[in-house]
Length: 322
Length: 156
Ligand code: SF4
Ligand code: SF4
Image (cartoon, each protein chain N blue to C red):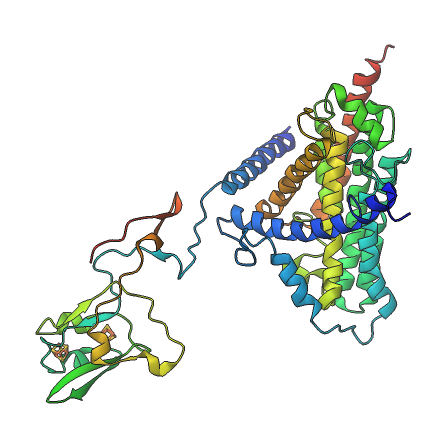
């Protein structure tokens, strides 16, 4: 039982241990990329290799802080919301095929299941913000919910193009369907919409309205101390990892690549590139306003997503004959 | 049509910004890791003072002209010399200009921070030591296009 492949996959790779380590490393990578874009050096001293252990140093620091749960808050939901967010993020990674056979849950409806699980996260953020019983967290939680109405529909519609091209919702089979050509070429518009909406879903800049450090002081995370702050920050990085892996899987041919290197290498390196490209957004663009995001979601993105479905229909079925 | 043109223009601007971000990833950073790396300073930089004990007559003109009143003339045996308090000095180097005996000199040494305030009082003996030459491989110059780069240290 202990050495069964599935158990090892869940515990080691692509499961929990690797998710924790990669999440911490992404924190370092984010600071390093942001620093390099601003022509700074970034974390440097925490290890000989360019400060790569910085997040582990921060982790130790946060772990020794006093755990304060605000007096009039709802302690159960206050603690439950971020930790559940971590579990949700880990569940997302379990759906991704990292190599042939290296997939924790190979279910028939992998892509919709991924998007369905991620739908829960704004609700958790509202729960966290509400239970803190404080102004800024509550505003942040409400913003998360508003934001969801803006991006959710274009996100699903842009994923629909991929499902139409592949003729299946199973992620491993979607990868197999790309052996003749990556979906990013016929689905360029869909990939762009998917990228923009998934950045909004991850609440990263330029769509980090629920956190909005300069407006509402980290929003729903404002009241979290020490380890709980870590637990509140963690889902962001795990979601970034999972979404980049999903983007690689459905648009960039997943683990497919020239066979002189193992499939896992191709999968991880493509994911890394997507992660860096998403991190670049953070250091390049200013935050949008809530009304701008809602207008863009319901007009531009929705229109483009429907146009993309039309294009995909023509590509798959051919021009409709009247 | 106008809104579409505006949106296209915005898309171009966004792409330019994004490409600039990518370009910066491979750019040399500007940050200097002071004190491991330090700026190369030109000759004529107004750093801390160098006092030539043999030339100074103890006339006190430097103390009189100093706008911050940070020079005290202190006795050393039969003679008098200036003693500096760098906590107040603004490095205007009026004292150097006004010294009739050319006993004062500017040096390029600028990192003279100390942990306690009394260490900022420089006795005539301490002032008379020439600055320690810093290791060549730590001298950098920063330009507005290329970022920080290593340069040979200038002779003083
Ligand atoms: S340093 Fe120059 S101005 Fe000052 S006391 Fe000596 S001789 Fe006079
Ligand atoms: S540099 Fe200016 S402030 Fe400093 S001791 Fe000389 S005269 Fe005074």
